[in-house]
Amino acid sequence: MQKSRILITCAKGIAPFLREEILQLGFPVLSESVAGVATEGTIEDTLRLNLLIATGHRVLFLIRDFTAHDADALYRSVSEIAWEDYIAEDGYVCVRSIVHNPTIRDSRYANVKCKDAIVDRIKEKRGRRPDSGPDQDRVVVNLYWQGDNCSLYFDTSGEPLSRRGYRKIPMSAPMQETLAAAVIRASGWKGSGHFINPMCGSGTLAIEAALAGLNRAPGLLRDNYGFMHLKGFNESLWKDLRLKSKGDSKKTLDCRIVATDMSSAAVDAAKKNAAVAGVEHLIEFGVCNYSETVVPEGSGVVVINPEYGERMGKIRELESVYEGIGDFFKQKCRGYTGYIFTGNLDLAKKVGLRAKRRIPFFNAGIECRLIEYDLYEGSKKKRDIDAP
Ligand SMILES: C[S@@+](CC[C@H](N)C(=O)[O-])C[C@H]1O[C@@H](n2cnc3c(N)ncnc32)[C@H](O)[C@@H]1O
Image 1 (cartoon, helix red, strand yellow):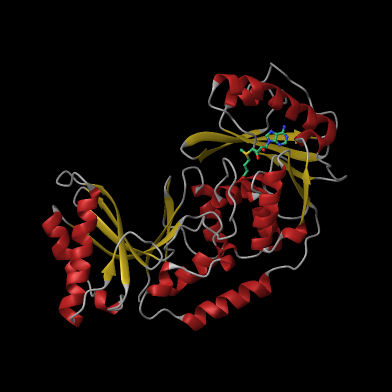
Image 2: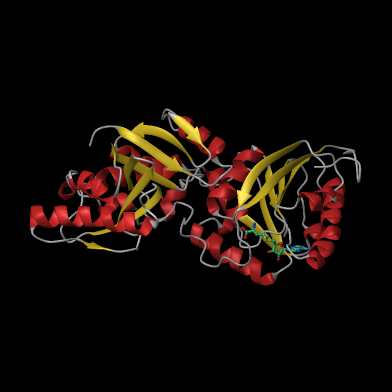
């Protein structure tokens, strides 16, 4: 296949970090929106992107742009594509769509029309229809239909890239793996200082930090992608890419990663998840209150993702936790940069330290901030004065 547009989708707030990753991998950035970053390359480039991108959600490879006024026009244009060249007769295809067209009330109808056009075309050319359905573990076709403008993509990721495959036990309110990777990038941590993660829950931040510190490709943990099910999948290239990325990854870290939680069930889950990710030996786990977390001498980052509560009673309980985080930062984390990831800015005010930066993110649809505090000797305590 020729070079084409490649759209890498992401969660709201993550695009600037995804853009940076794409540029670092040597790909151009054609455009950026809240929902993703567009680059260009061949279908073989999507193998590398799926393997190495840490903050993106799906790697979509453009098949064709066309116009369609209604469902019949969509069917006709989709039928013109040589699907038999990409999908095996005994293959399986899933169609997903995002539709804003006045003639379509239910996007499932667009899915069905698009899927019919694909399987009818293959039946006509080869005598047998491929199977189809909602499972995203084989060929996935993505339709974006805005007004009369349609773009059809192969979703070369299949399942979203946030499903790295290591989080077997999610615990409560886990952060998506891709969001955790973006938070680490936003903190600027690259493995030279320590990474301290009290309130680690299922361990996502600590595990992503270990993977980033080792320069280990996040995609190595998965063994199924959408591109593997397209005809002509270059398996030897995939093996070479995996091998090269293993060679590029370090075996040990020059820093310490500490992850604690007051829940022993959470720490057990985090340990198991880290073991699946192959980084358990690099993380020092502990069961304790966040304030008892042992912070090594030296410097680095402390990243805390406390609960942010929805009920008033719970929010009142959390006020003292946030106040305590301010004390913990001030008393135990001198020399570090502190970060709180929260969706409740009123609670964040209780920390009482002067915030240096507030980086916007979204988590499960809630607007959040990653708030940065410089914890140099004698950090200014500005309780009730400085609003985050
Ligand atoms: C929002 S969850 C963290 C989720 C985590 N980022 C993940 O990806 O799984 C908050 C965690 O803080 C822990 N926690 C709450 N209060 C705590 C405290 N006082 N000391 C230590 N851990 C606490 C909870 O057990 C929970 O696992």
